[in-house]
Image (cartoon, rainbow, N blue to C red; front, side, top):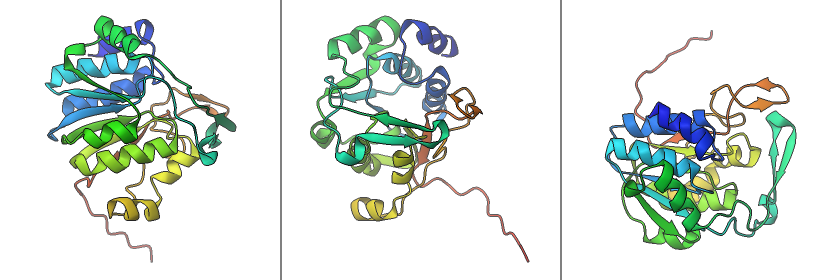
Length: 237
């Protein structure tokens, strides 16, 4: 698995780094939570190729959701994101990150395990309506907060307790804030926001260059109803 992920780093480049895909693959291979794996947003299929190999080894199906025609029209709030760790503004426009279904399938056929994949072409608000399988691991690389909201609204209720949801752009202020927006989560899903491990700078994989050094990543993690393994009773008096 490690070798395949490393080779794909050069043969099937992805928007996600080698370390990010290795972490998601590790979750797929190690989790005991029942269910399928979901990827929302696959670009040219580099990430799909690597994750499909992990799914094959784990005996799970990888459900791949993408419009295959790029991003939808961003809302006014989604046209630009603030990345504090980089002191940058990232801008988005309709059609960005477009790749055809044929291109993605070709990449996965060459460098992954396409037999473990099921493809769902179309915008998330249309395709996720027809998806009702239990989810063990989800990976959302959808760039726009509105697209992320659509994915969470449909996938979170399908996720088993302990299931992991990885989100790209965790270092974007708008994405980090969404996972702490109690009002939205309570209105749409009837629970408090789960928070995001890695919010603001990404999980500490240590290989993302920023203006302030090398640290973090683009990846964040939210886990549904994680088990409590320890209670710490601190006396600060």
